[in-house]
Length: 268
Ligand SMILES: Nc1ncnc2c1ncn2[C@@H]1O[C@H](COP(=O)(O)OP(=O)(O)OP(=O)(O)O)[C@@H](O)[C@H]1O
Ligand SMILES: [Mg+2]
Image (cartoon, rainbow, N blue to C red; front, side, top):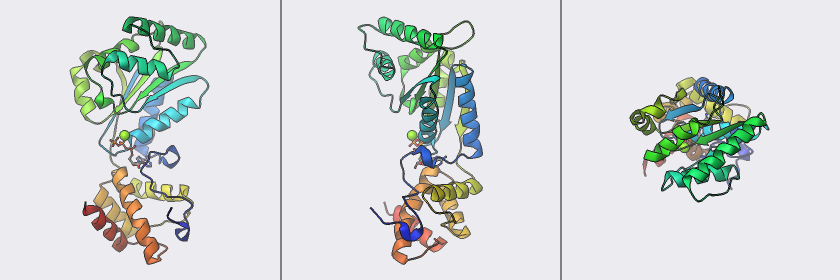
């Protein structure tokens, strides 16, 4: 692995995997998280998060999962890639996340899940399912989600469902009126502004071990202009500029080096 210690870094600051440790809480991420956790904690059923490719949806999904998986008052399931041939398969996959065995019929499977949810509820606990890439869901799978939201006590939902997906999910939900009308809270993750782009970079650099900024102000500006604040594009530039900084033996990265990295990325 590349030795980043000359830059004061103990580990790579711009990994492309959505590691919750590197999660920078911008104002809008904070708002989205507040809406999602409010929906889950108040047992309001369905919260939906929309966002463009690379804006940080999976990062948020993992963060929510981490919150509820660490909390003994919750049973949490995370479905990263809900591509299933039928709603029965989808249902079995959700059940399996909770350790429930497959059943012969969809009806029996629903009954099993319902009994499980009642049991968890009676223990004073709550159940959360986080579904990433929810724009991949089709037809009857949305209907299954609606059905699961019908599991309720007198006043509360027994299962909280967080749907996270690209903007296409919005269009799909528009066509599923009965599900759309059940959305308790919705959030749209927008790209970062200039200030948060700088803050996110500084945060990631700090988590990776370096206290002082790694980039000049002009370098930040160029990263922002080029990435338009899309977190993945910011990280890709960061990832590509680090080896250039090492080769050039610099300790702070200026706009010229960022420009070189952008040119290399643009060659694809
Ligand atoms: N709030 C954030 N703080 C730190 N890094 C972030 C943040 N949001 C996104 N990133 C980084 O941006 C990259 C893309 O994020 P992520 O994979 O979460 O996006 P996505 O919206 O799920 O993308 P896709 O639409 O392709 O699934 C990752 O490298 C992630 O670490
Ligand atoms: Mg994703």
